[in-house]
Length: 173
Image (cartoon, rainbow, N blue to C red; front, side):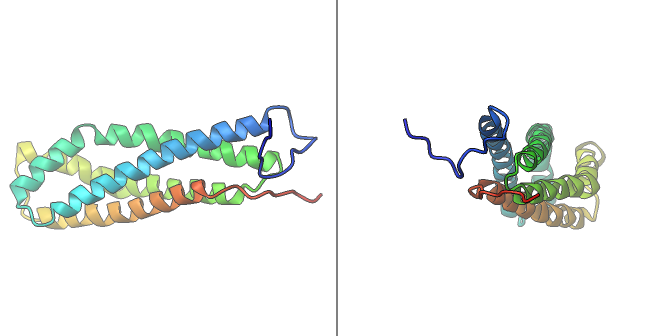
């Protein structure tokens, strides 16, 4: 059986290190890709709502807000944690870790944008159904969509970086 690795195995690396990196990489890519795809789907939906009236927009947003925050948390938080573990593991095994760390930093930016912009607006929009749609609803929508566009771009770039083939890297001591 022939094995194709990106670099010859490091004889000083712990047994199973390649398998650990492969497993972490797979899980990180799966979660980050699911998250980026989810954000892209929401971006397409939101762009199709640009011409909707206030009532239609509010009704669709109430459906979006029902479970999508949970989906975002269940994909972004583990992607961040596993991505950080992957970067640390690759560093410890003398492999190229900087692109992974950069992707994790982009995912952290996504989380920051979500917490600072999108989640507070989500909370505000949840109240629209019961308390009435405010006069400035389109300005609120525009702020949410602008922040969402930035975080979607960052998530897609992070996912793209994670998909890049790992480069062999050896540290010199």
